[in-house]
Image (cartoon, rainbow, N blue to C red; front, side):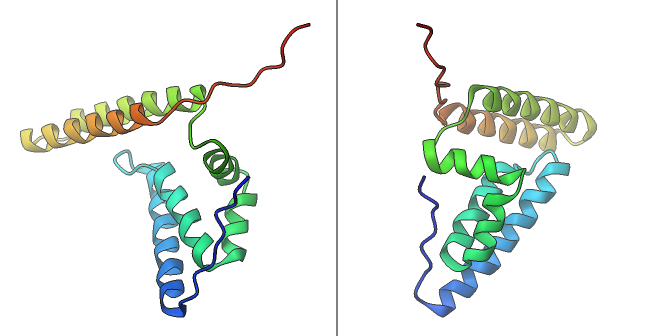
Length: 137
């Protein structure tokens, strides 16, 4: 597995990466509760940023029970498991449907619907990993 850990040489850029890593992590955590913010891309961005600045925070994300498997899967396969992709589709449709129903302004409904459609297209473009199952003799 490629861990993505290559600390940057510039102290200034390392400070920028750590700040961006914490902002991405915060946005990812907010994305758990807010339907419009996606969680996964922000967690992956945080892992990338911490991989450029802080071996400690990078390892913390890799060892975390919630973020670790997601990051390791992405580093190893650069694809999603079919089950993960299915749930992502389901959650996007569910959360955006609720959001579109709750807002009043037509322009906001159209904006949310467009953003939801855009997220579905981006998710559709991410490759699906086939599960390696042991073969029967």
